Image 1: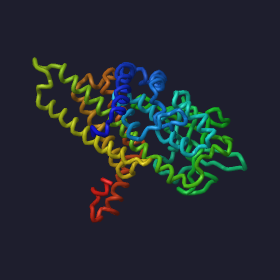
Image 2 (image 1 turned 90 degrees about the vertical axis):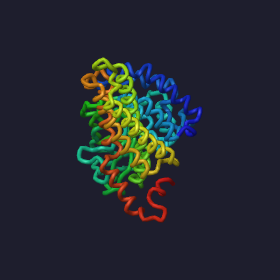
Image 3 (image 1 turned 180 degrees about the vertical axis):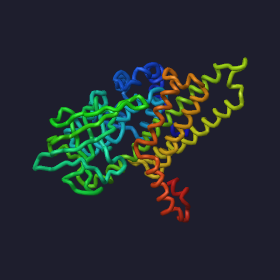
Image 4 (image 1 turned 180 degrees about the horizontal axis):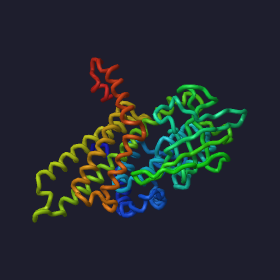
Amino acid sequence: MDPIINEQRRLMIESVRNLAQSKFRERGLRYFDGTFPWENIKELADLGVLGMSVPEEYGGLGLPVFDTALILEEIAKVCYVTAMAVLGEAGVQTRVISTYAPREIRERILPKVCTGECILAVCMTEPHAGTDVANYRTNTVVKGDRLVLNGTKTLISRAAEAGMFVVFTRVDGKPGREGIGCVLVEPDTPGFAVTGTYHTMGGENLHEVQFNDCELPLENLVIREDGFRKLLTAFNTQRCLNPSISLGLAEGAFDEAVKYVKERSIFDKPISDYQGVRWKLADMYREIEGARGLLYKACLSASPFPDPFLSAVAKITCNETAIKVTSEAIQVHGGYGFTDEYLVSRLFRGARYGTLGGGATETLKDLIAKKIINEGDSPDGILSLAMV
């Protein structure tokens, strides 16, 4: 992968890494109670990377998926909460606005994303439907030049801080996948309310939001037709950025484990001298490097969105690697690893989210299996197809 990490990318990674290691690491515990990491967001904005997914014409960097994943990876090594906050500025919601919103909205919102003044939230999950998008009940009715939105969304990140909500909704009650569209809602809209808060084991807060006869201008209906396909296409990007956080969590935990085994002694010798511990490190490293190769390959397939098959494989692998590696890092630390004060404990809790968000593991395994069954008898074989 070295030829892919050119000098420009290397300098960018080093800048983010230095900031994360020198500032974000020591602040990690203060955000574990659900406090939003505004200080870290501000410093990333000052560094210029918060608008990494925003097109250059709106003040952003317009970076490819691969570069965005590299940045999130570095942040996640030391603070899951901050990585998730940044994902909100780099993920599907930013791409929906920059691709489908009217120019007036793009010009008003996207520069504020770059400066950290406008936090974005995407609203997909409903109390009765997560992956089952076709059964959404949230509905937008078109009435002349106005929209009326009603419904409930739950487990929403950044809802208490967001300046714009990207809401996937049914349009005019049209059933099934064909009826899915997307509207933009600002938090001061009459009828909008944050109605519940859930503190997660990873440290961040998730929320329930309600839309009660929210009246919106027609231009806020940014996706009216073919919304399900557009959602899935954009979501392939999320399936590279979610695992980039998982990869960073695993790397951060591995780094902590290596440092600890060199410093900690038992029976008058470092625990790194014990074969059982060394084998743990070898397995952790092997898992991380395998996951990294798959993720980078998926990211580099983006044109402009990543290949869905490669993204699914990479996501599952990185998510599960993070759970295994962070768990082993706690084991290496012994009882200290079970305390909040040690970074590995917080990284482990954050790692558990990966398989749940951005497409559940079981759903993605089904997607992978269907492609294998349908195309596995190709003359070139399914592995050759994956190389395309």
